Image 1 (tube, rainbow over the protein chains, first blue to last red):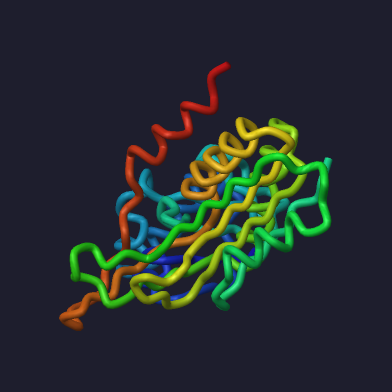
Image 2 (tube, each protein chain N blue to C red):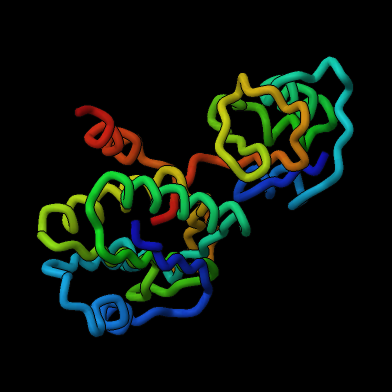
Length: 83
Length: 154
């Protein structure tokens, strides 16, 4: 699947997007954040406060307990500040 | 249900021209409320705001919020424009123009739309300082989330 990052999540990870292949044990958005956090210092920093990060699956907002199976794109970003 | 005009763009917009375009030739519109959100300099501190967005999702999410407003109020016209990129103080950021037969629906729909755009549309503001010091991301305000509760009770 494709992971995309925005705002300070993007800056901390150091990438705007990448292809990821999490293991089958990664079921939910929350699991995926834990898995990403273990991939290196930049990811650990980006996801250190996972509760403050929002997620979208295939461009729709989802909660952290949502299952990621079947999604082509997952996005991680801070709470929105548009308007 | 009318179709909303939605644009996510870097280009500036002309609020008066958008309102004219929405009401031009119409005889059924009795009220039109236009809200424009501008970039402010925070007491002279900011040289610009930089708006990042999630291409694709921004259009889709603004569309979902617009459909909620159209389902909730008897609107006869709706235009929403949200800019991204670097915007200097005094520049336009967001426009909502809501038209209806009567004022209440137009006022309420515009208010609802701004509350929802602020918390659901995937845009993030970064502050650029006049001093040239490192820019920082604007933090979401708890009061913006609290504002949504006004629309969630009957």
